[in-house]
Image 1 (cartoon, rainbow over the protein chains, first blue to last red):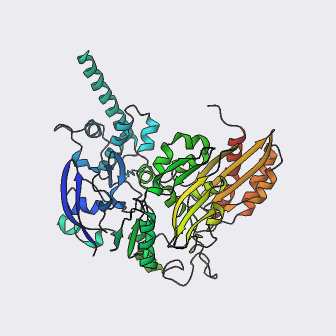
Image 2: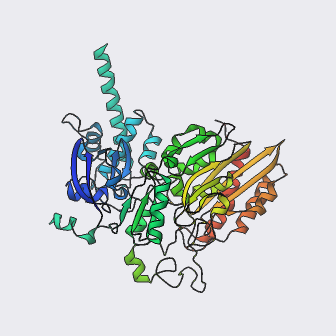
Length: 167
Length: 341
């Protein structure tokens, strides 16, 4: 079997592991690094449950080979806290009932984070488009879209307060 | 308990073992491909290949990734118009390029409706042009296919779509392919016997198994789109959901007008057969005429008459046939009366 020694940057930490090249990032995250926040759903690239961010862009870990990700920044749901606090998206999802069974949530939150980092003031349509690769079988999506909008508003308020404080 | 389930191979769809090469030049890629012959498979984004490997529809022993080959990741505009896209340019990168959307709206429209955002950041334009044909009976897990009996395309002797026949009817399901044909694109290939160019229209074969006029050891390097030159284009896609799904009908239309009349037209349908289908009967109805409603309707009916989708994709095939006419009309109307911006 083709096994390689790889160094992966996951959530800001370097991990050096021996990985069979046929093992997907999803398998390595869950089985070798025990980061089980990344979920396995369809495993065929349709459902988005395994979404992680690579250099800030959402990708499907079930279809990504770790050998192609050396030297890139991989972010999973476990790495989303900022300064020991949950990300505004995480708080908004909890408060707005956007989490039901929770299986799709890590992927949805990461897709939303990628959007907000690129576009801090997205419209509801842009949010829906950015999340179009993440299936949710519980919520009917309404609460998810509401939660992302709430997080957008919070981030904006916080920025305004910070700016006022500075001036 | 949970750890046991995690490590149980049966609980997940895993890739079969393979050897992996990531050459840094075309020469090196060609050498690896010729060394491994039919055991080797080219991969770019992997978004089409890996699911098929997980379902054991394709079982290569050797993967040759073309991600690190510089020629494949370039976008080069020619001085006098026209652009060459490296086959490894991601769909997200095509979408991020505003100049492409202005010059070739059909291409931007098609890329915007491929799968969903994560797939578009991984998948490439060359990969989309080469995606495997699809079929209800083929795109299933190994378990499912074994239970029903394997089909002609993989491991079996009959085609469940048309059991009396001897051919495979799997469906060309690329959104990019009909668009590239409508835009008059030319593909550049390199293989053990040198380089060659081929018109996008000639790149596809009406066979669900041998669906590309490309040898397995040939690499699709780049795609050249000709100068915009007055052509207007668009793409309409039918599928069940607004995202994720492959097309079950794609209509790419390009027209060039001259003093109010249609000088040239190209109408190309995707996902209605094993290759994209150019409908010359419909083009002839448009050419030389003003694109009045009755002319558009005539062309749309010609489109519907010319195609024969089969019952091996989502939606009823008769519905897809009728929608081909509806989408052709909508596409032509969009090009003749652009909505106010």
